[in-house]
Image 1: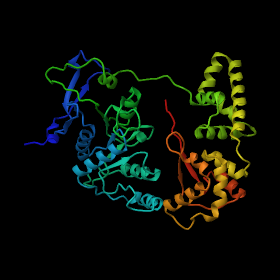
Image 2: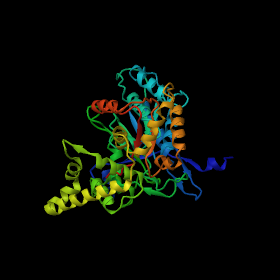
Image 3: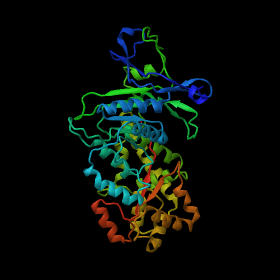
Image 4: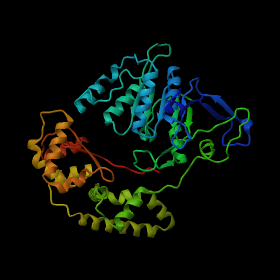
Length: 446
């Protein structure tokens, strides 16, 4: 007798719906083809309400494993970092281990291990047929995954390598990797940061098309295959293709290019500064940076604004009005800078603060405590402990380290004291200071 969990898992064969012409034409079934995507029968899962879900991650993993075993490179886009790990683990369980030598990536692997300080805490794709790529990995770990995924293999070689990357939107936003097949595991996502994944909202058309556009890359593959696993399963009868005219199918097959209205982030930022310079650390950082920008003795701020989309639109409609808006922005920026009430600091401290988007008082505090920094140790943990001890002496500074709306801060383990002259030397070479704080901004991309 089957358990309740087993009864809630119903094996089905995944079918792919292909359109022979551009656009969505549900009333022309002769232009639609239904083809099996895999000989496997991954299960649909019945939820607590008795409805079937698409079981997107398991279905995506099994389809990806089939294409990988045929020698294809696959990217699976997942909803979150947990799903990435689940998909990669399932694929690695279905396929034999990778055998190809990774001599080119060895130096990068050593750099990752040195940065993390522990092999147990390091993500290493060596020997894997599937790896993950998401924001919780260190930049070096993500680059290591990319490097191993790009390794070319001879067509007639029996070597097995990393063929699948399970990723979040870190790859969808602009990073090009050689890929034959893209699988989008689900067409919705959690609307808020809720561990249960609810409530959920549909992906926007341009997000779906941007992910699917990763399939097929210039100088690698002229064509590519994009597979969308819908959030809710769609049942079809192959003899009678009765499909809904609206819904996710129309979004995926639409002939439109999913263009949306473009909003100028510079214009939005300047408008916010003009209205109010609030206590948001991100806003304060941008105020400091815009105030400090200069080029060839002229105001770099004016140059930035004049090259913005917002200024261009205003100038096209009213040239004098555009100049008046620029003057208002300049005045508002000056007033906002005065409201910050930053204490007087050394020039090199101000330069580092502006460059990294954090308050000058924190750089001043770190400079005073640099003699106690663990420069003889290489583990990231030692550097973080030193940093937190410094900040703990002034609890009001913890706002600079908050997660969520504010910047996310990470400390480099290599710390050396330097003076103003050294700062200028580093600025000339374009290198970041040794006392460095990496700030990751959350930007809205249109």
